[in-house]
Length: 501
Image (cartoon, rainbow, N blue to C red):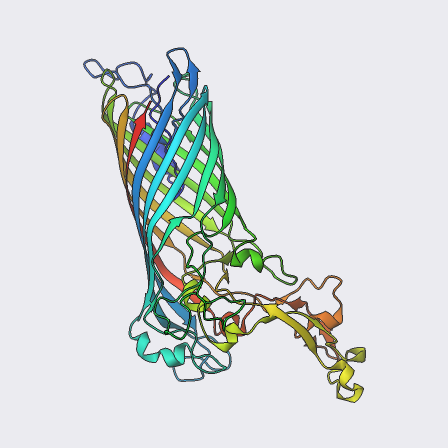
């Protein structure tokens, strides 16, 4: 049985349940795919929607299917980087109240990707899926935002002297393979086989990071400093590779349901992606620290709905034109991430970021919870062990995004088709440096391990409120100093060709 290929829908679109139902109603009653819709009209092809097509094998008239895909995708991302203000100046903030966010920088990123894939039929309505995206060029930069460059010595000042980073800022051009994926697609129901049921596809993919892990870099670093410094040894003159991979292994599960009504086929679906950092990356080396509130990248959950319109097709020549209109809403949970400021903060020479964080505290606290230890001698002097470097990876606030996608598929014949698509995504404003100072889960650590995570009680003593979060940096994570990514817009343009055997 020939079907016209698997099309991945990760990336974007939202709830158009009502619109989908309306379009379906306008399309009239259900028409069998192999019957004329009206006298004189061509017979419709029996293929399901592009998004729910699954190559298969061991059908009587088609014992084996193989689809090979080659495509190009260009992505442009822009965002405004802002920072909470705690400056006691007119128009800013006083008394610790945050009255406004200050413009810091305009962020831009351009990514060119060559997408390669193969779908192999292994049984009826069951396919093995391979995907390998090759990043040809990834360019990132920060520029002045409404004149912020002229005030950067104040807006980006480091309390220990100097500033966190300088504008304009440019990252090195990166290229290579981030990950490859392998998975299964299974059509539980198939409208081609049973006209009374919709087509329902479920799938699962495993992702495996294979490229050089990302390292924070400054392409305009002074000659006396490495382009990509080693946070474990920030004074070393040796530069590391910029890397390209997020160095994550992951698993994605998805489901899509579609039903054809004459010349339209509405669909809806859901997917979820969970990733796990590899130990050989900067992320993995600082993962699982005692006291850390977040030890994982964001979890992504996406609900999408859309409709495919088939305005023209010729069954005998295996030709047809398909227009796909889709919306999707994605929830990005709180997590540690390579954010828009990953390179700028991770390559910073500011002492507040280069000094290692404590990994634990001991002997911090006076007998009986007293506020002052002076009367008890040096044995109660606060001590700690250091060793947690800052890599540029920061705690990111949860946020949502919504995407709108449109594509056109031209099936030129039985063995080839071409797809062109355009997408637009808007992301909710969110903090990109938001690590809490303390983890409230004190556990069995005891009062001494609480370090600075203590509060004064009414009877003149102290009580532990948790243990320190080693990923917290006062300079960028305290309210009044946190950075945010606002007005994020992402454009996607894609072109691909599919050969079907």
